[in-house]
Image (cartoon, rainbow, N blue to C red; front, side, top):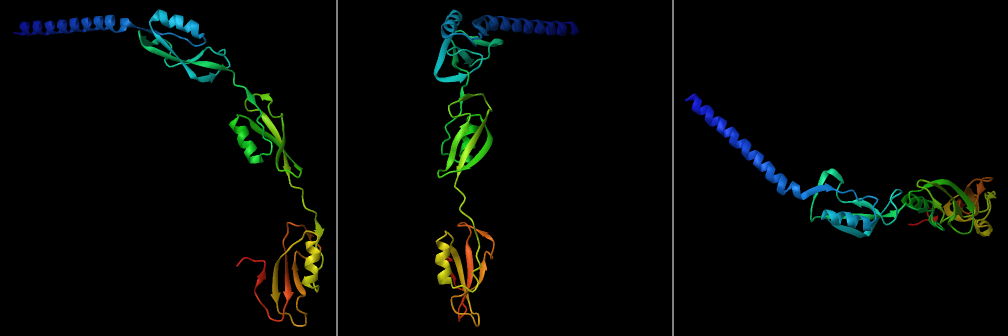
Length: 250
C-alpha cells in the first residue's frame, strides 16, 4: 500500500516537472523569442536610428513637436527614448519606440527689463534661471529699471547675477517748518501752498482773547524739516469750539 502511494506521488512530481519544463520552453520560444533587448538610440542621428530599428523590426516614431536641451547630444540627434535601453528592458518586434531630439545647449540671455519695477525684474530673472545681483537707485523723471549689467541680450550661464539700476522719483525740496503760531490761517495757507506744502487738517477751538482764524497750535513744530510729502495740521481759534476737521473724510 505504501509502495503504491509512493509511486503515485513520484508520478505526480514527474508530471508537474514535465509540464513546467514544457511551459517554460514554449514561453521562451513564442514570447521571449520574439522580444529583444531595447536598443540604445541616445546620441544617434535619425537616419542611423532608423537603420538600427528597421533591422530589429521595431518602428521608430520621432516626436517633432518637442525638443530637449542637452549639453552632450548634438542638435537634431536623439536625446530621449520612451523605453529604457539595455538587456533588462525588452521590446517586441513590431512595437514602436518613441524618441525626442536634442535642441542643443540651453542658451540663456539677459531679458529686457526696461521700465519694469524691481519686483517684476527679480521675478523675470528667476524665471530665466538667473539671479538678482546688486540693486542701485538713481533719481529720474521716469520710473522702473533703467539698465542691467550685463546688458539685456547678453548670453550668460545659469544662475548668473544680473545687477539692475532703477529710477526713483526725485526727492521733493525740504524746508524748515516756520513758526505759524499767532498768524492768520488765511494768510499762512497760500504762502505754504506756493512752496508745495499742504495744510491738510484744520481744527477749530474756542480760545479766549485770540481773534478768530488765528493759529494756536501746529504740527510739525517750528524748526522741523518738512516737504510736500508731510501733511501739516493746525488748530485755529474760533469763538465756538467745533470738532469739524477740514479736509477729513466723513
